[in-house]
Image 1: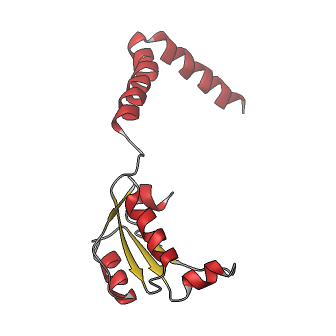
Image 2: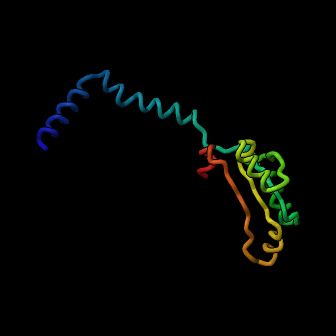
Length: 130
């Protein structure tokens, strides 16, 4: 253990003795932090969402309208079937698919658990991680 401590002490003295090395160690990471902080954004905008509404109830239309009224989401290609939703997601033409099954509005109105199908494209890591 003593030889390792001696070696570390020697290296620290060597690094702090050289002014160029001090600039590299302290200033370059600070500059990188400032540049990358302004260059990177985690804001999500214009996320394409494709919706298949098998229920066609007032509640499902309200849900669809709330998705498309948001600044976060934009309407993706229309889907006529659940299979079409899968194809749109697989080919990258949409980022999120939402499947509203038959009876969803009735379940919601009666206070039962109303299930939805939601798939998110995992290739977009900032979208999938939220």
